[in-house]
Figure 1 (spheres, one colour):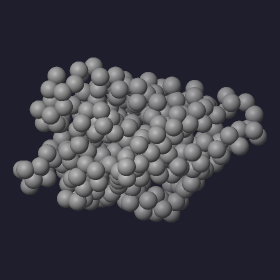
Figure 2 (figure 1 turned 90 degrees about the horizontal axis):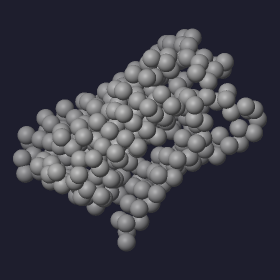
Figure 3 (figure 1 turned 60 degrees about the horizontal axis):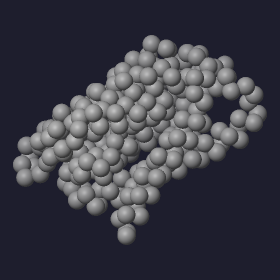
Length: 299
């Protein structure tokens, strides 16, 4: 099947299956899987035009709602963190989209940027996996890690949010989240991922929030910012008639169809899977792709 906007010719079942399996595993950690689908489109499908970022955002907008629905239904959506991610990320995404089109249209330059973004994500996950292994020696039964307890917000102010999950109290500062997410939004807008795959490891590894409460907030933030990015890509397309800027809606929708099922079952399965296993799988995949792009740029 030929997708005219992107110029990609591929059997429709391939994008669907790839998106399903990628989303199933990544959604458990609050990541849509777009950060892995972008290298797949660039390296395996040969789709390297700026519009590939917008197409990736289409995948997010189609696939994410099913996963978010499960987290909301099970009471594991941390709403104060969700709104902080959205408010902080949105302005940065618009800047990132413009930078992608104006300054990073060349595939080679874009790949080195992608490589370093993935390297950062993989490094944060690797650190957190190591810390998780050390902590697990003192925790006892693994079943405690997969509790189905809901998120109970105790206090939520502009300066601090405090909540209880699985019998423990956690807290974070919204202003710090706003600042981080603004910078992440710029990178996410350029990369075409919405930013959730960058902030989720940061929330877990640096701020110390449990992955079971971060996942829903990161996915919801990614959905809102991706929707805004898709609209912005489509709007800017009229100013760049000689460049492929407008998203490939059919290809992005096909990826999204696979992602709908993958994220739904991933979110539903998440509470039964130890966090270190989820992050370990992600870490290996991310570092592999990052190394491929970074070394490929210099060789």
